[in-house]
Length: 371
Image 1 (tube, rainbow, N blue to C red):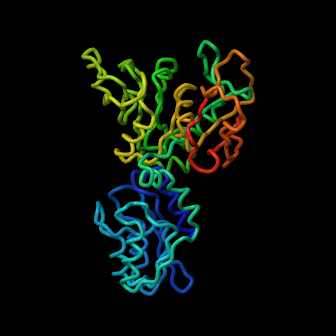
Image 2: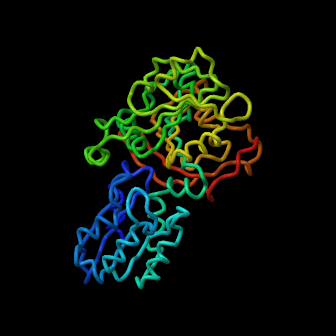
Image 3: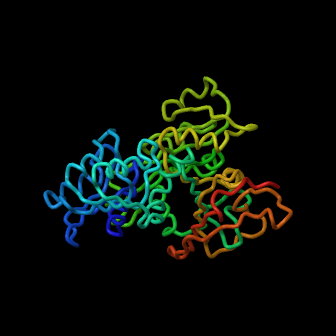
């Protein structure tokens, strides 16, 4: 199963909206076939592994990181392929959260006389497809918020100047997270202040990641822009891929130029700003599994306040910006320690001269922060 999980990682940047899946076929303690799913519409991992195994698949055990599918979509059902190949046993790391499968794939195999087991290395398999699981079970993508800060928790000078707090290695590292995201979300404030491109630039990735990411799939760029003020010349509108601008009121005819470069969509919300949750529900319906939020303290803080931040990806630079600089997040004015949002550290790494912290709220999805 560890071998199958390593294979599944090969599809980290390319399988969306499908899950990342690897399969290894073993007979007489020897690997006779292996494969992984690369992208939607192409053969699934089981099909590739069985093809590699050929006649040796009969009587073998198939280790697969996700329960085999039983429905016909862009490709035939994997359960039928496994039964036809004559495998004796199928071991799945986890059940498929897709309601079209959800345990039925394993039951179909068992009904055909194939021995089944599920749960081996389940935690690693779920982590690999956390966004897919989130979309199917919670009806919203997994949300990862990327932030860059000084050691005193500041993200920009009082006047908005922020280039650059972190070093080039940290900025290159962000490409890895963009490449595995279905959408990158920012706010109009960031667009007006920094004019970011928010695209995936393979030339800035490591050689291995660059190889795995080919051909490059640009994430959907999303701007939360209440009044559709995004300039038609903004860089993110001209970098390839699709752009969605989410506002809170219908755009007027003066925004016609914007329609040439982006989809304009009214998203429900409270007050003047589109609701982050409503936006995530829109993205889930568009089969987005993972969202990377690259925004200022107000919008990033809104995702945290509303309990929508599944992970925080923080790059901390060894520098100090002082008391007057802008804070990391705009959060409520809490008055009691019981109101704090505690985080669990998932990973700590030195990236160039900067420290990268990957964190998630403790005990699952947090309740909205009240102040």
